[in-house]
Length: 154
Image (cartoon, rainbow, N blue to C red; front, side, top):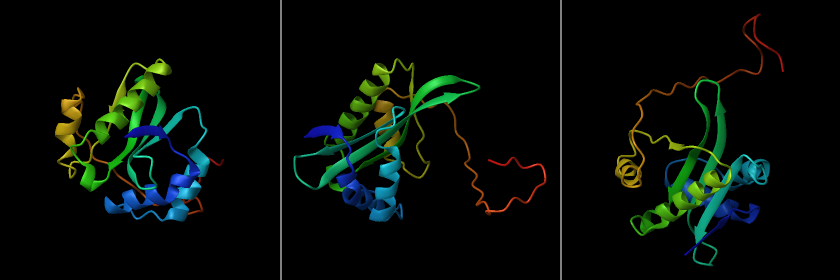
Protein backbone atom coordinates (compact mmCIF):
# COMPACT_ATOMS: atom_id res chain seq x y z
CA UNK A 1 0.00 0.00 0.00
CA UNK A 2 1.21 3.48 -0.75
CA UNK A 3 0.04 6.87 0.49
CA UNK A 4 0.43 9.66 -2.05
CA UNK A 5 -0.89 13.16 -2.68
CA UNK A 6 -4.28 13.19 -4.37
CA UNK A 7 -4.47 14.28 -7.99
CA UNK A 8 -7.31 15.56 -10.11
CA UNK A 9 -7.45 12.10 -11.74
CA UNK A 10 -8.53 10.64 -8.37
CA UNK A 11 -11.89 12.47 -8.50
CA UNK A 12 -13.98 9.46 -9.67
CA UNK A 13 -12.58 7.20 -6.96
CA UNK A 14 -12.87 9.83 -4.22
CA UNK A 15 -16.49 10.34 -5.28
CA UNK A 16 -17.12 6.56 -5.25
CA UNK A 17 -15.75 6.19 -1.73
CA UNK A 18 -17.67 9.26 -0.55
CA UNK A 19 -20.96 7.96 -1.95
CA UNK A 20 -20.39 4.60 -0.25
CA UNK A 21 -20.35 6.45 3.09
CA UNK A 22 -23.53 8.34 2.28
CA UNK A 23 -22.23 11.62 0.85
CA UNK A 24 -24.11 12.49 -2.34
CA UNK A 25 -21.15 13.94 -4.23
CA UNK A 26 -20.89 13.39 -7.95
CA UNK A 27 -17.61 12.93 -9.76
CA UNK A 28 -18.09 16.37 -11.30
CA UNK A 29 -18.57 17.98 -7.88
CA UNK A 30 -15.48 16.26 -6.45
CA UNK A 31 -13.52 17.25 -9.55
CA UNK A 32 -14.47 20.92 -9.08
CA UNK A 33 -13.64 20.80 -5.36
CA UNK A 34 -10.29 19.10 -5.94
CA UNK A 35 -9.49 21.71 -8.57
CA UNK A 36 -9.99 24.41 -5.94
CA UNK A 37 -8.19 22.61 -3.10
CA UNK A 38 -5.17 20.91 -4.63
CA UNK A 39 -2.01 22.96 -4.41
CA UNK A 40 -3.18 25.09 -1.49
CA UNK A 41 -0.47 25.31 1.15
CA UNK A 42 -3.00 25.06 4.00
CA UNK A 43 -4.65 21.89 2.64
CA UNK A 44 -3.45 18.31 2.53
CA UNK A 45 -5.30 15.66 0.55
CA UNK A 46 -3.83 12.18 0.24
CA UNK A 47 -5.04 8.84 -1.04
CA UNK A 48 -4.14 5.22 -0.33
CA UNK A 49 -3.80 2.76 -3.18
CA UNK A 50 -2.10 -0.42 -4.27
CA UNK A 51 -0.75 1.09 -7.47
CA UNK A 52 -4.04 0.38 -9.19
CA UNK A 53 -6.89 2.65 -10.19
CA UNK A 54 -9.17 1.73 -7.26
CA UNK A 55 -8.44 3.76 -4.13
CA UNK A 56 -8.46 2.19 -0.68
CA UNK A 57 -9.21 5.49 1.05
CA UNK A 58 -8.55 9.21 1.26
CA UNK A 59 -7.91 11.91 3.86
CA UNK A 60 -8.30 15.69 3.78
CA UNK A 61 -6.70 17.98 6.37
CA UNK A 62 -6.77 21.74 6.86
CA UNK A 63 -4.47 24.13 8.61
CA UNK A 64 -6.78 26.21 10.79
CA UNK A 65 -6.25 29.42 12.69
CA UNK A 66 -9.00 30.02 15.23
CA UNK A 67 -9.34 33.31 17.04
CA UNK A 68 -10.10 31.68 20.39
CA UNK A 69 -7.67 28.75 20.37
CA UNK A 70 -4.91 29.40 17.86
CA UNK A 71 -3.46 27.26 15.13
CA UNK A 72 -3.98 23.54 14.55
CA UNK A 73 -4.44 20.94 11.85
CA UNK A 74 -7.87 19.38 11.49
CA UNK A 75 -8.88 16.24 9.65
CA UNK A 76 -11.95 17.31 7.71
CA UNK A 77 -12.48 14.05 5.83
CA UNK A 78 -11.29 10.45 6.18
CA UNK A 79 -12.89 7.63 4.25
CA UNK A 80 -11.63 4.07 3.94
CA UNK A 81 -13.23 1.52 1.65
CA UNK A 82 -15.55 -0.72 3.64
CA UNK A 83 -13.68 -3.86 2.55
CA UNK A 84 -10.39 -2.36 3.82
CA UNK A 85 -11.43 -1.50 7.38
CA UNK A 86 -9.06 -2.76 10.08
CA UNK A 87 -6.25 -3.29 7.60
CA UNK A 88 -4.12 -0.24 8.46
CA UNK A 89 -5.36 2.05 5.69
CA UNK A 90 -6.90 4.63 8.03
CA UNK A 91 -3.87 4.57 10.30
CA UNK A 92 -1.51 5.10 7.38
CA UNK A 93 -3.57 8.05 6.16
CA UNK A 94 -3.64 9.60 9.64
CA UNK A 95 0.14 9.07 9.91
CA UNK A 96 0.56 11.03 6.67
CA UNK A 97 -1.66 13.81 8.05
CA UNK A 98 0.41 13.93 11.24
CA UNK A 99 3.64 14.17 9.21
CA UNK A 100 2.16 17.05 7.18
CA UNK A 101 1.05 18.88 10.35
CA UNK A 102 4.47 18.39 11.98
CA UNK A 103 6.20 19.76 8.88
CA UNK A 104 4.12 22.93 9.31
CA UNK A 105 5.00 23.03 13.04
CA UNK A 106 1.34 22.79 14.01
CA UNK A 107 0.89 21.85 17.68
CA UNK A 108 -2.19 19.63 17.42
CA UNK A 109 -4.21 17.49 15.05
CA UNK A 110 -7.95 17.48 15.64
CA UNK A 111 -10.82 15.53 14.12
CA UNK A 112 -14.58 15.72 14.47
CA UNK A 113 -16.40 12.42 14.33
CA UNK A 114 -20.14 12.19 13.84
CA UNK A 115 -21.89 10.55 16.75
CA UNK A 116 -23.49 8.13 14.27
CA UNK A 117 -20.07 6.88 13.08
CA UNK A 118 -19.70 4.63 16.11
CA UNK A 119 -16.90 2.51 14.61
CA UNK A 120 -14.68 5.55 14.10
CA UNK A 121 -14.59 6.57 17.77
CA UNK A 122 -12.44 3.63 19.02
CA UNK A 123 -10.20 4.07 15.96
CA UNK A 124 -9.33 7.65 16.90
CA UNK A 125 -8.99 6.83 20.60
CA UNK A 126 -6.60 3.96 19.80
CA UNK A 127 -4.49 6.44 17.81
CA UNK A 128 -4.14 8.72 20.85
CA UNK A 129 -6.90 11.22 20.13
CA UNK A 130 -8.81 12.30 23.24
CA UNK A 131 -12.43 13.41 23.22
CA UNK A 132 -12.45 17.14 23.91
CA UNK A 133 -16.16 17.90 23.64
CA UNK A 134 -19.51 16.92 22.20
CA UNK A 135 -21.36 19.49 20.16
CA UNK A 136 -24.32 20.06 17.90
CA UNK A 137 -23.85 21.31 14.35
CA UNK A 138 -26.48 23.66 12.98
CA UNK A 139 -26.76 24.42 9.28
CA UNK A 140 -28.77 27.13 7.59
CA UNK A 141 -29.15 27.27 3.84
CA UNK A 142 -28.52 30.81 2.67
CA UNK A 143 -30.48 32.60 0.01
CA UNK A 144 -28.47 34.59 -2.49
CA UNK A 145 -30.06 37.82 -1.33
CA UNK A 146 -29.53 39.30 2.10
CA UNK A 147 -32.51 39.29 4.46
CA UNK A 148 -31.01 41.77 6.92
CA UNK A 149 -30.01 45.39 6.53
CA UNK A 150 -26.95 44.87 8.75
CA UNK A 151 -25.53 42.01 6.68
CA UNK A 152 -22.00 42.55 5.41
CA UNK A 153 -21.41 42.60 1.71
CA UNK A 154 -18.40 40.92 0.15
